[in-house]
Every structure is written in structure tokens, then in C-alpha cells.
Length: 544
Image 1 (cartoon, rainbow, N blue to C red):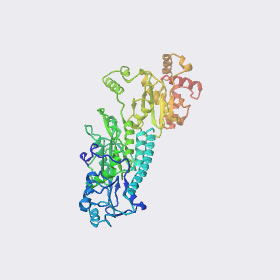
Image 2: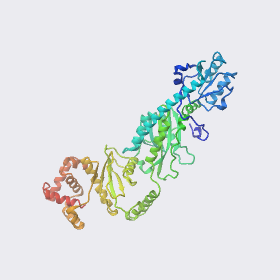
Image 3: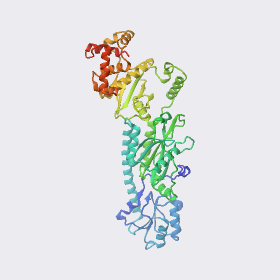
Image 4: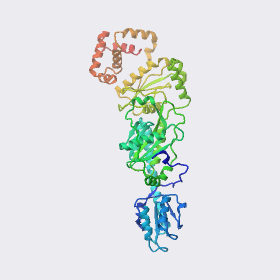
């Protein structure tokens, strides 16, 4: 398939508002008495039309069950050839009063041209056949609407999960019974769900993704193809992913040229799915001015067959994924870009902070997935959106936490699927200290298995001592300790002397914790079992 083979919406005839009806379903209605006497058994009916013209070609849209009594039938071969050329799905021939039986020449012509031929008995009016087809279409439409509604609910629920992009792809693959992939313009897989397609189909999907994500005028919003009997489709998304995050993505697939469908396959596919491909508005176009550092994205699907409603379900997923992956734009994005440029050119954080929004205070949040999996850039961005911030650092190492900077003076709310640690609201110059406190809070939350832990500022008696004097006393008291020992002691005290929880928080063995705490007691020359000693040390450690 190439770009020129895709039908243009401006020249495509409007389709019926109902799914196609299999010819076998109509033949199964015994009360009609229909009998197939020629042509293939498989056909999909989009319309029912009655005509006694010698050449009804100009009045056919394609996909019709044409009913005729053969009043002006003189040349069966030319008649059938013209029906096939017009895209008719089947021919129903009524016997009597014009013909006592179906002409043998008509039977041979239908076999020769591959057009299903039905014998309509005298007691079955054409209007009864039309009514039966419309009833079957209504039943199919009802099934399709129920299926689309269930899929829409499942996709919307998935979009509200902590990992919305993988969850939406998983639900989409489950409802379509195939493979759903989020691809970049180069064919790189960001997220996948469903069974693996053949290498031929995978290469064709990558090629389709490159087709719909081309950054040039006139690029199609969607494209379809077939490869080895697998139905393929790709949709351009309105979102994009920063190319800076490509360093932690792998499994790059190199697109190859897919097999082109034959003219017969293309015609059959258009007959079967013409209505389905037109019932839904096209997915949203990508942003007209993408950021230079971003990669445009595409949703690619590989299924064994296309069912009525598949295009609608895919359209719902396209809208959701476009929203989930879309970068934040406008004045806030311009401010962030200006702040980054000024930082790179030597400005201080205090000078660029006004470009990011209110003066403060700021809240630093560290987060990790509860299931232990690493969060990618898209999932981290979804967390930032849930917390109400666009300032998100997804991290690049396996052990890195997601860091979010909030321009809100209050603590964040717990997020399903995440463990959070938050520092108290902090003015801009103290953000590095707040980052350390948020990391400590996250370690505490993971050790205690709580969804959110917040380091609170000193209050009560501790707040009565001038900060400079308290800091000087803390430096003197803790001078014998190295930073790792001081951090171990602080964590151990915060967890009420629990060896196991401290080991979890610091990601070390419990014997290492025991050794470090013993070394602290030795260097400080104190008894760490004494509550007064613990209290004074805790006060000092809180000053850091």
C-alpha cells in the first residue's frame, strides 16, 4: 500500500449508519426461503436496492443486495459484469412471473464474475427481504453500540490509572483482540500490549507510523494496510515525547516495505468497512507547531480481522492517548523554555524563578511506583498532571525517583499506584535542601509502607531556638560523623530504631545498619539507647 492508494474523504460516498450484514445471516432466515445458487458464500450487505433497469450501474453505491425479476435482462454476462464493477455485494433474482426459473446464463455469469446469486421464491416479496436486512442491521448496530460503550468505559477507566498510557493500550488490545503499540516516527516502540505480530506485520506497522507522523503538510491522520493476513492501521496522535528520553528506550524496529494488497482485497475491504471507517470523526490532528526536540507519536494496531466498531474504539483511544501524551503549550511552556535558556547561559535559579510562575513557596515531591517498576517519561508526566504540575523529572536510572516541583503551598495528595515523599513548602533558595528532604520522606514512606510521607518543619520548642545557633550546635555535635553515617543515624532515629525498616529505606542490609549505628555511638561517645541522647541527636539532625 502506498499513500496514493488511500481513499480521499472528499470523494468517498457516504456510508450507511449501520454495520454490514453477512450474507450468511440473511440466508439463515428460513422464512424467506432464499437459496444461494451461484457465486461465493461470503459477502457483506450494506444496502438493499430493487431495480429492473437493464444497467443499474449509475445508481449503485457499492455493497448492495440488488433485487430484480429480470424484466429487461437480455445479456446476463454484461449485466453481472456491470454489477461487479459497481461494487454490488450480491444479486437476488425473483422467479415468476417474468422467469419460471433463474436463467442458466445468469448462473454461469455470476460464477464467472464471483458475484453471489440468490434465488428468491415467488412467495417472498422483495420488501420482506429488505425488511429482514434492515432488522439484521439494527441488531448488529445494537451489538456494536454495546461493544463500543463497554470499550469506552474500559478505556476511560484505564486513562485514570497511575500508568494511563500502558493501561489504555492494554484495554485497547484486549477489546480489539490484537496488538496495540505506541510508536515514534522512527518506528521505536514506547509501549506495547497484546500478542506479538509477525515480523512482517511489525515492520509494516513501523512503516505506517512513519507515514502518519511525517512532519509535512498533507500527511494523513490515519493509514491502513495488510501484511500476511493481519489487518494493520496507524493513527497520528496529538502528543509527542521528548527526544531527550530516547536514551532509556530500546527495541528499535527498522521499518520495511509491507506487501501491497491486491485490487480484489482492497475492494473487499472497502465494501466491508466503508461504513465503519466513516462513522467516526477523524482523530485529532497533531499540533501544528511541534517542539523541535519532540518526536511525534502514532498509535498502531494489528488485528486478525476488523469488526464493526473497531474504528470507533480506536478513535476513542486516539483521543485519550493524544490528551495523555500532549505537551503543555502556551505561555507556561514559553516561560519554561526561557528559564532553561537563561540557566544554560549562566543565570541563577533566583533570576529565572519568576518565569516559572508564582514566587513560591515551592513543594518538592519524590515518587516511585508501588509495584517497583520504573516510570517512563509519559507515566511520570501523568503523575505530574495528577499533582497539578508540569515541572517533572522522570529520572533516567533504574533507582531514580520521579521528582515533581509544585507551585502550591500545601502538601500533595496520595496518588494510587505511587509512593510519595514530600518536603515542606520551601522558598526558592532552599530548594536543594528541600530536594534532600523529599528524598528522605520517600525513603521513610517506602520503609513504613505508607502512600505519602511529608517532612514537617521544626515546631514547638525546637522552633524557639534561633536557626543559626541551632545549626552551629548541630555542626559541632555531629562533626565526628561522615555524611553516610549521619544519614543512617537520622533515618534510624526517624524509624524509632527499627533495623529492618531502616535497611529498607536505605536499600542496604540490616547488618550494615547495625554496623553503622554502632560506629555512630562509638564516634559520638554516647549511648544511643538513652532517650535524652536520641532527642538531642534528632534535634541536631533536623537542622541539616
